Amino acid sequence: MNIFRTKSVEQSIRDTEEPEHSLRKTLGPIDLIVFGIGVIIGTGIFVLTGTAAANYAGPGIAISFMIAGVACGLAALCYAEFASSVPVAGSAYTYSYAALGEFIAWIIGWDLILEFLVGASTVSVGWSEYFTTILRSLGIMVPATLTGKAALIPALPGLHLNLPAAAIALILTCVLVIGVRTSSRFNLVVTIIKLCVVTFFIIFGIFFVHPSNWTPFVPPAQSIAGKGGLASPFLQLILGFPPQAYGLGGLVTGAAIVFFAYIGFDIVATTAEETKKPQRDMPIGILGSLVVCTVLYIVVSLILTGVVSYKTLKQLNTAAPMATAFEVIGKPWAAGLVSVGAICGLTAVILILMMGQSRVFFAMSRDHLLPPWFARVHPSFGTPYRISIVTGVIVALIAAFTPISDLAELVNIGTLLAFILVSAGVLILRRTQPNMQRSFRTPGVPVVPILAMLVCLGLMLYLPLITWIRFVIWLVLGIAVYFLYGVRHSRLARVVREEVLSEKEIVGND
Image (cartoon, rainbow, N blue to C red):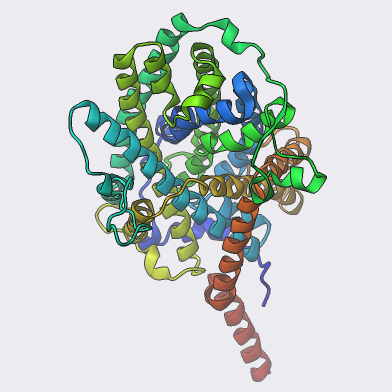
């Protein structure tokens, strides 16, 4: 068994032309930028901005966003080269298959499945929080047993049901099945709404900024009482440092945490096969959405920590910092408006994370590394409806019954690993296939890909040890699935067997 066999770029493109596996090409550059902004502007700006400022970086959270943005920018340049040259669904999975071999491709595909499933489930729970808050403001009280706040059955205190979280996942599944064009239009509407709300927060909030709240901009480092062991950043455990907040370490830890906020531009790459002119439009969509969102994150974080001190945010321990900021200054109507924007923002994030998951699973099924039954395309809608439905049901179940507070960090570590492998793939393909047509070429090779790998690895090392342990367990499970099913059923394995049989027949005839 050659587990490092590669699938040529040409073969990947030919597979997209098979009628039963052909996705409909309907997306243009604006659609791609909107998709990127739609998923990036969500949990990060409405939730993580405040929690990371309060617990790790203080007003220096703006620097943390810059660090995470640089890591994403370096990786985005590598993604843009791949996405324009290999316009096939699957993103990092497909690129790794061409550059690093089947086993590495499987690992990264399995990794992306975790990233998107857990990410969509986590955001669904956050969506439920904002949704029930808005209902309460309207005088509508939802029973705590239906929102995960209380046990569903008193005799089973560990059993919780978050009905709104499950409902939004299933509703968006229907949108995905109907068609990517419908998803694009839906995403356009909610993205416009939340961008208007973010713009309102910036313009309105700037009048309530107190520069004294920015002093000190980077608070001095201090030990985190009661936090250590598995909850400590991996690098600090290796070097023997006690867990710390603020200071330089806090800035980097904050960057590792808010990295979740940038997940999105890589999902743009999963839609390459459904793009009209991927050679031109994929780099525009990937880089354009990343630039817009990085600027917005930095500005919003500065306004937020200027309106409300990071110490106040820490005391309030809020998961809705933008709305809380306006409540603190006595503007509840503005807080309600921001909550509506958050609902729209999180809705778009769930939609696009689920779409990214279905496209990666679709690509793996088309390669027969997973059962090919999932890879069937709907005859009318032109979407991978089977895997979209399976994805939606799984996300709904996880969101309904699982508290996912710590699992968001799993999304970060999985995405960072994907970025490292894509960056390495650019270097390898430049050497192994120097004449391959590249509509967009990553500048500064090999410096840019190497920097991307180093920065992403550094952020991974600042994630807690428990996150590494959970991630390793997931990878071990994936390796078992690969050797029990994928390695024998993959299309490449079948091609190799057919070639061997053909050679034997030729030798026998001789």
